[in-house]
Figure 1 (cartoon, rainbow, N blue to C red):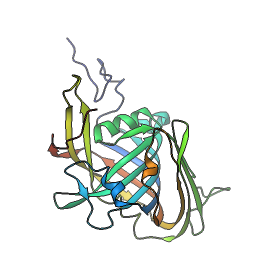
Figure 2: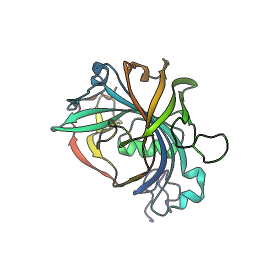
Figure 3: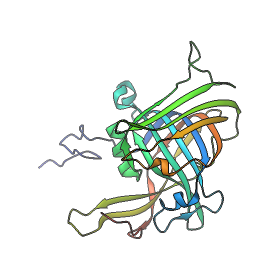
Figure 4: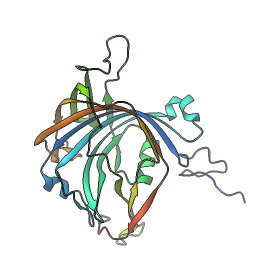
Length: 270
């Protein structure tokens, strides 16, 4: 009998229906990042054991909008854009594990199913959302990448707007921010199919870019608002103090991660 193929379900005789291809996954994107400080206790409540608050600036948060084109190693998806283009918005905090500082995505929304599947594999807590951001362009009314340029960004989930921002660029920067500048520490969780049996998959993993290139970052200021919603908790990371906002174009390759610990998070399957 012919074996089934495909990196991710559905698995078939050819593997052509698989929701996502095998890594490496390649990304080109425009990123708008808004960094601010919240109550560190609100960050701590999102960190399962054995993760701890970062030693420095433990309440720092980055809310990031990203307009992506992505593809497998062959690049074939770029010529079938419905399989390549998607948008996402995600909240990142920092944490400590094993004496090292990590970044951790605590909330994330995307607008395509293949992006959700990749997130399940990587440990990102992805949900469907509606994400939009202003795109730069050298002609017409769109903003150029220059001092004074203004970009808008919105995020909605389950028909409710939960975040919006207006970013005004000020000057070139040495970086695109510090909160999302570390390797990621994520959990991969899957409840057992048997009731009361806890988690069938419980892994703390590290991952990051296998390769990275980026254009000139720009720094500026942001007007950021978060809104309450019945099925979302982003607003619990309330804005106490703005830090800065950034714009940058990047290229990233993701090609796997490594296991840090298994079966030690104490997370509930309920």
